[in-house]
Length: 322
Ligand code: BMA
Image 1 (cartoon, rainbow, N blue to C red):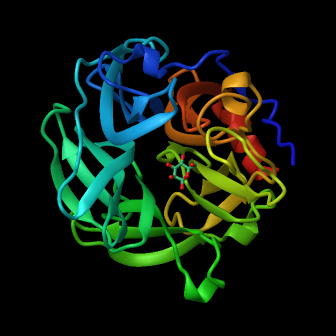
Image 2: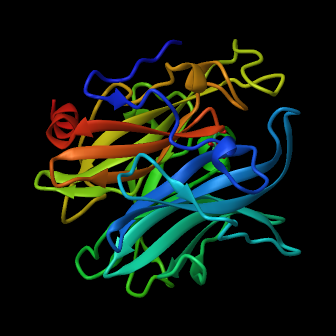
């Protein structure tokens, strides 16, 4: 299967961050969350550290970088976030959302008793206050940047097993909370069967942005090709990850206004398709709407590097409405 990006997408021809940019042990730098905070761009990125050349991974932490233009990044001298104890083996895939001057970080956690999603708040990117952790198995959480009908709102991706045939038929859900701690009011937003280029699973990608026409939101879409053999470091990597785009109702984001029926971003460049840990993986985690109407979409590529694509907000909305 050969997926291509939409013609509205302009990719930066180089990654914005790789392990070579990191002043501490780093191997795979990807799946970052990005926000504008106090006049600067801030990025929290996943670092699977070890040795890139030797294809060895030893663990995961989350690093921090700042930028004035969203393209050139200064990486802080040490990782900013790591969760590890007897129960939790790691936290990863951070996504950032600023609400009322506070930066919230959604992250995934691997534990001995399942995969969970967590939300922490910070104002200095050194101290993090953990607000909530989900039941397993749930992850890929992203927060909307404001309360909806008085409630904090998140998209998420539980992993039902028995009811979906014991395979990866995973969908996008939403839940709401009065206080970031207690979550409920859960509803299905998008089923994997609603995405023509997914045959496996879907999940939220970057936190949604608000437009006049609705909440514009990316999602990741997985196409499983059992014919694929070695693609990257492992003997077999059969999943192709692309990014999709959808528009959700402003008042009730469980109502989908439109989904673009083809991938928005697909792996095409050498560092997306040919090099790295798991090739053909596009995994957005950050989306920023500029005053000019330009949308910056940050995405992990090949589970190895962090990249940037841009598009005009009206073009993105147009894809969802046609
Ligand atoms: C998902 C997550 C992501 C990763 C992707 C492709 O299940 O683990 O962190 O980018 O798989 O490996």
